[in-house]
Image 1 (cartoon, rainbow, N blue to C red):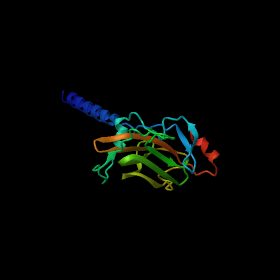
Image 2 (cartoon, helix red, strand yellow; image 1 turned 135 degrees about the horizontal axis):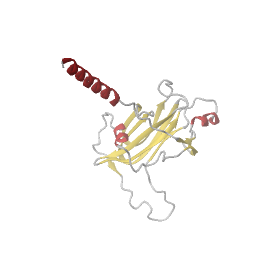
Image 3 (tube, rainbow, N blue to C red; image 1 turned 30 degrees about the vertical axis):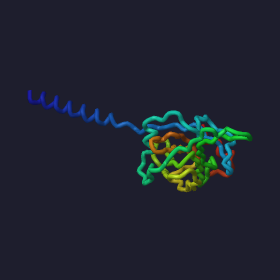
Image 4 (cartoon, helix red, strand yellow; image 1 turned 180 degrees about the horizontal axis):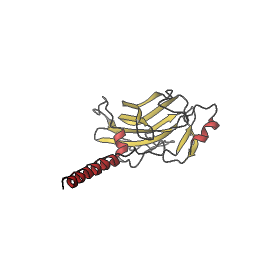
Length: 202
């Protein structure tokens, strides 16, 4: 009887340990299926692969995507505001509708990029570059209406040749957290010519 109780206890212990072992899962892999090709003047020249709304305003994000911009920073929302653009098209002449803008170029990128952004008002801007496991590789935060930011991509252990990374970004103002949010995919390519980079996009 003692041996039977011992065997039952051993079996329960083994089952519990095995269940705990199986509960640890590998990290989720996110697919980045295409890029907007952008020249050194910041002009979009077309797309490679599947376009999924790069460098625009995303309608929805998952909780996991929102969490990516939840990194610690020292930039306050105090005094921020969204500019009123009502009436922009009143009166004679040619009018261009004002809009928020975020772009990072050139793309593909060999060793550096320039992140350019312009927001309507005094805004808090946040950006993060992540790999396919959503590991943050670069973060940036500021409070202003626009800026040009140099991004160093030369570390080949962090930014690997032939790999697509993703930038998430948002504008926020007091009582309007992440009111404008989007993403853009960035291909690292250290090949000699642009055409040599095309093979890395699915």
